[in-house]
Image (tube, rainbow, N blue to C red; front, side):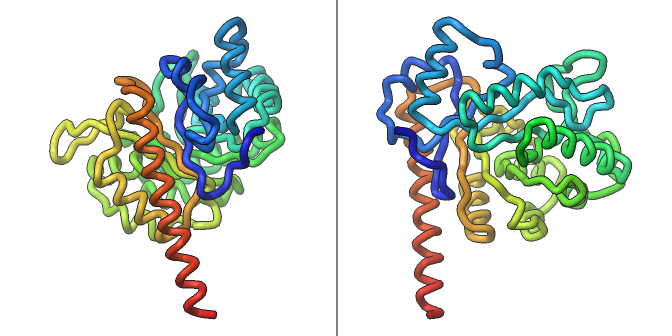
Length: 285
């Protein structure tokens, strides 16, 4: 029987290259698995059967890739319809999308940054509200890593907060993206955290990145999580409390055991913060 996703849940991204090992692992190895529904909608045969088996054993979260929330082309209503069917079929517990655009007269196959302007806030928020209506659920949007800023009338934190408020939606806080952006664009990640609305943070992502240079980090999802990102996750837990947290690894996949060590580190951190908060509450009784 599947467990529930609680704030002290540590998850792992479901990648096809890991399927044999994921199918063989025991039911408490991770608390949930995350899939990109765009890569699984309509998939049948052996892969479809394996996904069905895993979704029967583990709670599933879904992280969309192709809605293009910041794009100017109309939302893909067929994709939204099929995403809702996918979410219902697999009893998806959390659904999120990237705060970016991914299409312009066809898919760009990348997460492109949205201009940080008042006009973009209104446009993106309207599309998020429409997505939530079609999916029949509240969603979370993820702060994305970006390397070029097309136009920044507002700071990134002001843009994100305005979108969350205008759309009345939640945030999937990608801690690695926050760290990468803070280095590449020269801002204080702790100050960024201090201005986020705790009540809107639904979950966290962490991942590895590549150190191109001291002031240039590349969000690769192809390496172990680095110490600075673990420290930033710890700071987020301390400030906001624990939330379901997912380890992302997209390529250079190591043996599953290595990834499970990282998910266990998430669990250990979560429990430490829960215990710390409990002790603080007892001290004030």
